[in-house]
Image 1 (cartoon, rainbow, N blue to C red):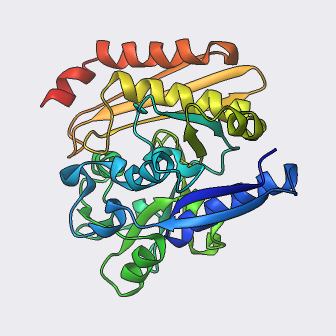
Image 2 (cartoon, one colour):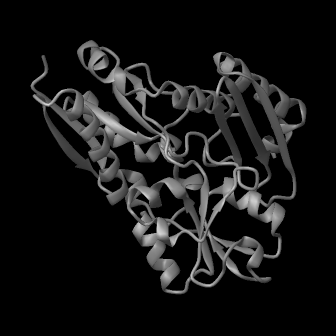
Length: 304
């Protein structure tokens, strides 16, 4: 029986909350195990003056955590699934995906109630090409400006008047008890979320069988089905933060629904598709969605 587990986490308040959340779940199952959280500063947290699309993508948020696993400085790493690259090196294993929080995007503003209330020339803050393309497609009169930093930094920039509104993941605001800052939850039909948004993943070394057995019960099967299907879409389309695409799956009883889009960054061209079926066919439905998007011209958009 393990006596101690060390969790590797980014040092941002939200990342630490997520690590604490997983720590609590493990403790509830195994109260005799000592659980320690060790914070690491990643390149994605340091390089805040450039867009992720130009400095290497969301993988910059996890490299230091994976290195800590390889060096045996930590036993597991907790990630936001939307930050986890599509291809995981064979040394590592995604052992569990915990139950998803609200996956929608959130509209935050001190002046306006929603995107449709914003006048021509009003500034919206986001560094996500996925959000940018969908906003520009529906609200071409709005100005999109980059927004980086942790959640508190982004809210501070809004409060200083640098933006008329900002768009953030609702999950992070809810987890940090900042739900009251949300003026509007943007429906997944208006803004398809990022792949894996709102879900947490637990990564370990592939050869750590003892820890794998201990952590496997933390996997939420329906959340995992949804996130893995979404990741299938992103992988098929070479998805990263340099590509404006999104995919979102949901389960209602036995019915599995997945929708996705691919767009040009300026929103001038956007392709949508949706598939429905049994949740037992989640992988096939993710693949079918990818094939439909490709048939509609996704590869041509992404190659430009």
